[in-house]
Length: 165
Ligand SMILES: [Zn+2]
View (cartoon, helix red, strand yellow):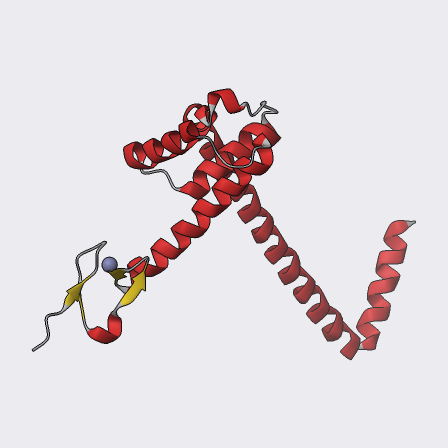
């Protein structure tokens, strides 16, 4: 029997049809997707740095800072990008090549809080929208119900008209 390969990331034993290969390493489907997502997020972070620091490519110092934060704190590249965006757009900080991406380390928590707040607001807005839609449906249903009995409509108009004066 052929020896099963294992996922380089989680160590799971893999049947031949379960194997996914990335950068000539073997992974399970789940880890493969995670690695693809991570490599996407990494590219986005690098691109954000190049555009916003106005440099051709991140400096060696920046690469080291990013690697250290990933290793030491387990922060995702997407969260690092978000923190840089937060510093620049929300706090109006200058992004200075000299300090690399040191801002991320100092403002990571604050940016996370901000992100959570925004998410909460977004969720509340979604809920509010839901309520509005439901209210509209209820109103429409009421209307059609009333339309079925025109005498009731007339009576209601009269009463409402009377109230207004
Ligand atoms: Zn795996």
